[in-house]
Image 1 (cartoon, rainbow, N blue to C red):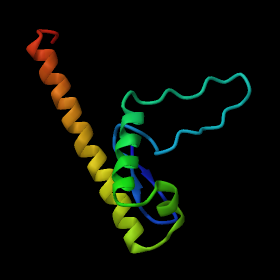
Image 2: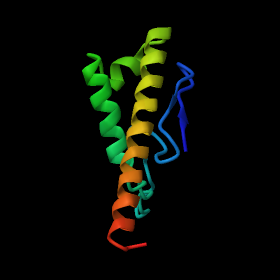
Image 3: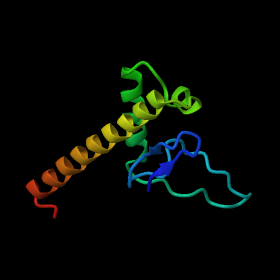
Length: 100
């Protein structure tokens, strides 16, 4: 599921994770929500992409301009593409080894 930043209008993430940062508050005794299996990898792809561009998610999130919006959208697209590649290779290896 994607997360839409209401301040910038940027949609972050993909169908694989709900938001870039996991920090959900729960009541005492409640079990925290389960994170999607590839969510941390997706966050790392986004972080790496933004670092290569000389920025961070936090810095871009604090800004409200077109350049920040474009960079966050590009980072999300990059992470989605890399995860798709990762999943395709994984499926290929499973088929190659007869696991499917």
